[in-house]
Length: 175
Image (cartoon, rainbow, N blue to C red; front, top):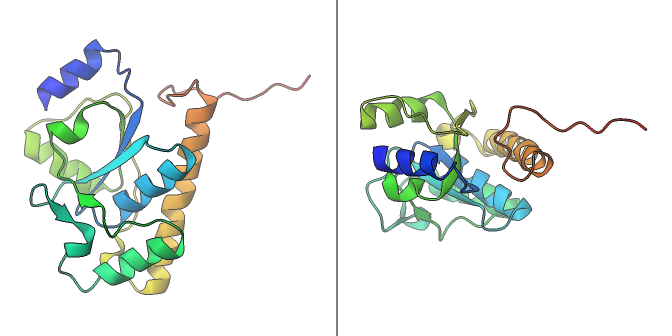
């Protein structure tokens, strides 16, 4: 991961893609990438800190929560069933200009895996509850939290010269 971090810094972090990260890459990060791509097509991907390698798909996740979590997304117009579950690794970080960690656990697991704190420009932490063991209604509430946060991010990215990495937010002045 150090190589990717150094490459991003040398490139001035020119990559604009946003990577959403949660634990299993089943719900929150998949939902966030889907919503973000509805605003800015092809500009987001997702990954998980606890994904057993490449070639695993959301539809193949053997867990009773799968159908509920996929159903919540589908009801909101986001299809995730056929998406690959991506492990957080160097490949997932290539061409990424922003990493959104959807919970503190994802951050802790990421830093434990690499053995140090990752200093990637554009890193944000969103404390979004894990809907894995929630009811359908609670899962929709979490989806709405994700949708609102992604909408705010997409607006910020549009207002701050396309990368959204600055701390300043453009506020139009009255004439």
